[in-house]
Length: 503
Image (cartoon, rainbow, N blue to C red; front, side, top):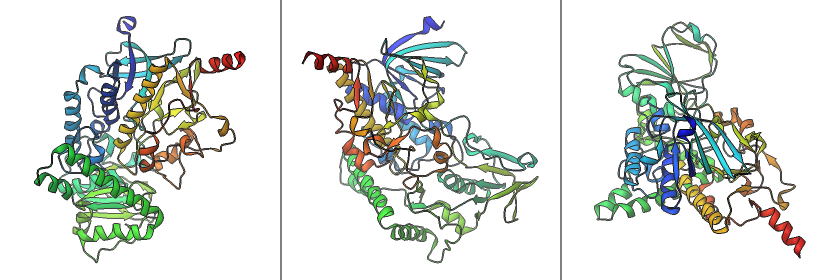
């Protein structure tokens, strides 16, 4: 059966989420002669927007930038998961991508052969049968976290709790919360989304946070988009202009967060006061210990969570957990909090390249032994690109940039008759410092810090790191020369040695 189901494609895309669908569109447009398939473990497209079903699930970025550059967004800037899935479905239908997607295919191993210049990809289907793909190029778009197993700390006494405990990632949307006492553990984007939605559904909510988070509160409208539409501007132009407006605004926020963090912090507090009044008390629950944007800034459209806090529908407790109890939990300061439901919004479990076993010429790949090239390619691993997006800008901005790069690289290989490419440190990189994947002072979310030792390494030069800086990469990555010294192609060394000997 495996042999009967085997097939070859020029490019194999892994994942049918926001990254995979966007990458497929770029490949079709820019490399129309390439055959491709998308392998997706789930039974449908959507990735993170299909995984998460907790109350109020919505984007944490505006859709003018989280949406693709090629598909205008027409709704509210912060969008529900349902609206995002509809948008992605339109991209799939409008561009004939559906026939290329293989749903229910879980990859069990990837192996590169330099003798054949091919990846062999083994996958298991939902019925248990095995299938084998071969491909010249792997485009990894499966994201960065485990969709099945979220991160839940091993708190004391969890077995004693008699109520309903669930991680937000595993939430059943049929759960009735009306009239229930709900503890939400966490204060990041997931908690900030779930708390107001739970309140709206009639729950009495306590948000228990270990430490405060920075929030960005703004009306869930784009006055610029509405004005442009009013005066008759076409949707493609509206999308392009509003997209640039959001990009500039977040660039300015990022710059100010580094250059004048106190002023930026006060501006964020002022936005909150616009929804809850000048007398709102920020200490101790809304005074983070880090500067804005050192961790992701959580969006609150229309200040919804703060409105519920001010109205008394949601209570905030800043403390750590001592132990779970039969009726709820006890904090380290001794406060007893009773709850019918406890929802953990404690983040992701990091997944490096899908936790798929990789081999290159029979040798297992340990990603921590590789050095990353702009967060896309890795030393010693040929014909592979990983899409790892932005956190201080919308993830999808990098999907578009990386899509252009991959297509440019594939075009260069075709023009030069090359079948293999990998990145390698250049002679001028010989003394370069090799460091962890990300500078903790630059970006330090807990899920990344917990498993940083599993990630590829970075160098201290811009090209050997993923710096999370869209505003520099939007110019740098399009300017990459595929003939640069960092790219090594098949037979290139042998050709150079032969030329040198002939001279």
